[in-house]
Image (cartoon, rainbow, N blue to C red; front, side, top):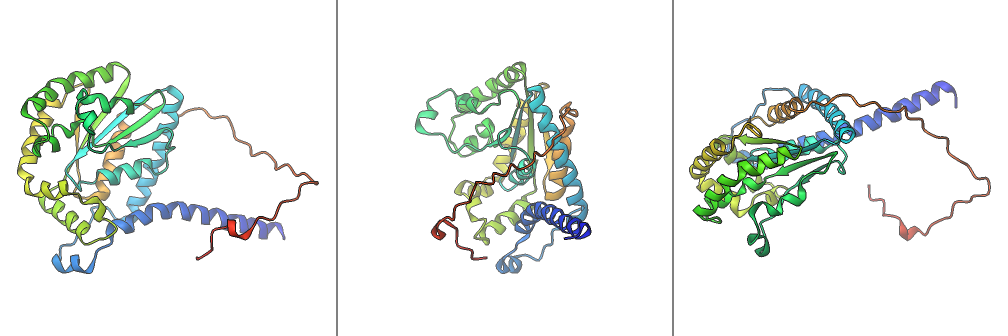
Amino acid sequence: MSTEERNSREQGWVEAELEDSFDEELEMEIDDERVDKELRAITDLKHVSAIDRRTYFRELLKLQAQLVELQDWVVHTGYKLVVIFEGRDAAGKGGVIKRITQRLNPRVCRVVALPAPTEREKTQWYFQRYVPHLPAGGEIVLFDRSWYNRAGVERVMGFATPEQVDEFFNDVPEFERMLVRSGIKLIKYWFSITDQEQQLRFLMRVHDPIKQWKLSPMDLESRVRWEHYTKVKEEMLERTNIPEAPWYIVEGNDKKCARLNCIHHLLEQIPYGEVPHDPITLPDRVFNPDYERKVLPKELYVKEIY
């Protein structure tokens, strides 16, 4: 094989690898936009993003590259970062979390999405089950819903008494100040969408078998109690918006813009910088002339369907 042929082949391989990497995001985008025929019959509304797809991908990849720089800096400095994602059901919290974590090391950046508390946990100090998930030095923790469940769903659905809710509001500012004093950077996002937008996203889940798992009985009940959720959200933001850990509201009707805006804002909140790296040299493969690769039984291999 000539040098020119070899270079062309290597270039083709690199392009294929890059294309495969980009396809990860494209797959998620396609998944977001799949619409069942039944849903198309229900509504003729069209959701047009303020940002075109090409620009969205370009900006997202830039921001994800910066997130990798942030990750390296967090590890290098021993920084401790907690980001809370709250908002109405189907507001887009999961989508932005996916884009943040997509190219990061899961050992450094992890997502915490706790289920309903067990009977034992219900008898504990309210914040107790969240504390074990807080970061050590050099870690990033993203809470997909958090201790603010008490101020939202637990309050609206009657899972917490008025006394427990009042106790939460009295305790949470000091709890968060303790976290900040301990060296944790705490950032809180509320994703906001309109009544109509939530309805359309719920309809998408109803008519899409791949997304029906996202629709819980609590989600359905939240439609009935929309105004109640609005009132408790407003009180929550008012009573827990402290200087040490303020709330930031992300307008979520436009998914693409919401993701970019949130990630861009997150990066602005942290004084990260470039971390020096030693140059990486790929070592040569060691060949042993006496080594013979064994032929493994065919039944060990996954059947090649595709």
